[in-house]
Image (cartoon, rainbow, N blue to C red):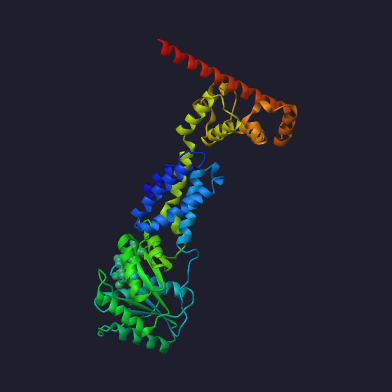
Length: 435
Ligand code: GDP
Ligand code: MG
């Protein structure tokens, strides 16, 4: 997914203004990337339509760093879609019953242990219940975890009925004063009727205050289908996304949230009992986007000298329309690239005009300040800058009239040089054509 998104953002590379065209191209790439990350096509389309609108809306804001602005918009949108704040689980009841459901191997038993540990740390009185009656090892597994976190595990190795086990566990909890009972259930490798019926029966018998559906984040589109089926039968309250310590990109979080519209409450990031986190939509959005990487990519893209921009500037020079805005844009480009002296020669026209000057990034500051103190009209038509305008610009930029004069003089010379170069180029072309 990340590579695809990187490609999407590459579309925006170096463009100094977001245009309808590159927003459209970029959102299209984002959509493809989301679809490939198991987001339902319709959902992905809805998401990207909204992203495109927002990006175009904020056109003015994005004049300097469109790539980063775009990433931010996508990030915000994904965060919102995944449900804003992290949601807590309901632990009210006497005792409160938390039912854990999901496919075999999804991480239910591991999560059950982790949740017990978390609640215990919050000072709650917890009882674990082993209601997986099909594998003797399942009871043993929960017992080991219970011991590890210091929470009692209720089990009945001879009883093959998970419903009565759960009921007996609740009675036992009341007797010994435990306030929360977590019921770990059995799963199957794939969704089947017997399993669904069994969890449904447990649900009707124990009336849980919270049903958590556990799903392996590595299983892609299957995770979404499984979530849908479980939700239709159980109407669960929240989702636990496991195995996010691997390289799962988290696309499942987005699609599950969109399709079943239930909050993701926890994420599980390892086999250790501590490896449990509340779900934070903004962090997941960053994960889906591979945020750090995308941002550094965008930064690198901005540092790189942009060919399109160079072409645009060249055309302006040819028409002798290079103005102070272009000049400022070029200065800002250079500054981003770091080593000014090495790079200055790359800028069309400016290389020869500024080669002999002793420049570093600091020496740009007064120049920028002066240009920024000019009105739009003045930047576009420097010839209108008369004495009184110069005075105003100097005062506004905290420089002297002499500095303003010098800059305008240099700029004039640069333009003359560009014109001369153009004439020479034109003469050369004419000569070639005549030959
Ligand atoms: P269950 O069949 O749903 O009860 O799943 P288990 O809790 O037994 O977990 C199945 C396997 O996944 C075990 O080997 C666990 O150690 C492993 N596992 C569970 N949660 C995580 C997790 O968050 N990260 C990793 N890497 N492994 C996990
Ligand atoms: Mg299990």
